[in-house]
Length: 115
Length: 117
Picture 1 (tube, rainbow over the protein chains, first blue to last red):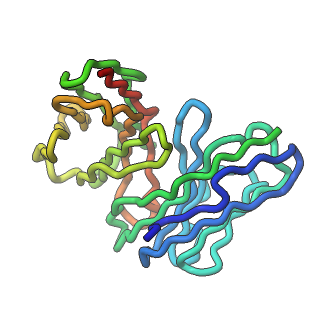
Picture 2 (picture 1 turned 180 degrees about the vertical axis):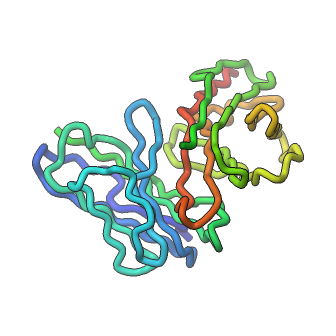
């Protein structure tokens, strides 16, 4: 059974378009995250949500808008895509009782290519 | 602000050699958590270990071992008798405790390990 799943796995699109990446976890976790991995493999947090509430917004441009319809889903919508948005986007989840920073389980990643 | 440094960008070894990956971190918190993740060529991120700042015992899991030294702010990782399947990028990460920190992971730049047959 897939613990953290993301769709699509690959996304190729033109500059200026709007696109969404979906993430679902079936682990019953309270906290979900989005990370961006650039071409040099550097991983950086973008957002975290706890029980559908935004906890971290790591100075990400307003063109990126996360949406959490319920505890098991955290989608990422990107408006007006730019070349610099090309990266691999990872969704993750963790239990995190009382801020104990539990292990984060990562999805397989979505490789976004903006042409 | 928290920071993680992995000074080695790439290490190449021959199978059966031991390899040690260095990780140095910075944080102002007294309570924090350290992690190692593996990213094989297939791209997924695989959890290896989580250690809290109050537990300085070294840990061994099969061919993997970790050396946590608070005095030098280091959390090094050793693969003993490396195998070709160990070829991957390895990330060290830090998370500060407390709900305000949001449990975000701050990653080091990663160390690419190439194990040659």
